[in-house]
Length: 183
View 1 (spheres, rainbow, N blue to C red):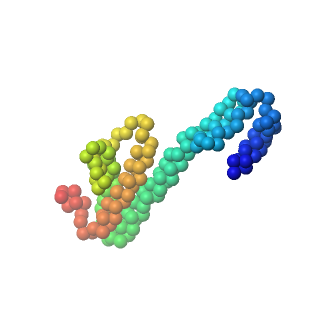
View 2: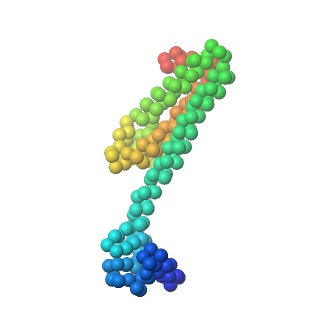
View 3: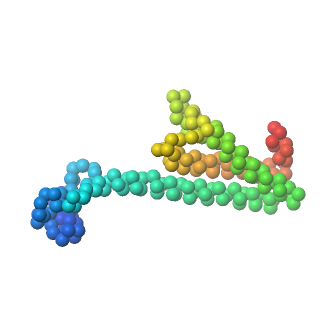
């Protein structure tokens, strides 16, 4: 097995430099790869590249964030679909009420999820337990954790606000906005 890897390395180095590792001018010219460690370090001439760390840094979070935020956008577009479905299912005089109710659900739902919801779902403090989180009220992460936390926050926010829009569709024409806000 190790011999196959050695041949693969020889072929790679020869394709990059035009000469094999055995015919290298000096040890500084081409260094063999370390097979025992989990890190892959490539040394060509005076240039050293830790390939494992570079790949992990580049692809670890950015690919996840792109897919998570794409899914979040798709979930948020469901809001408009629910609004149109609800306004088509009610009488003409209640269409404006339904659309305003959907906007209020997203705005107030987003605000309350930012203030309390994320903290009760995913808060990390000494009072958190497996059932309920505690901490991170009015989420404001530091610069080093901002990307992953806000990605998770917006993804969960999209589900929370979509759930409230579904409930508002269930009570369409049964509950007016004035009664809903006064309770």
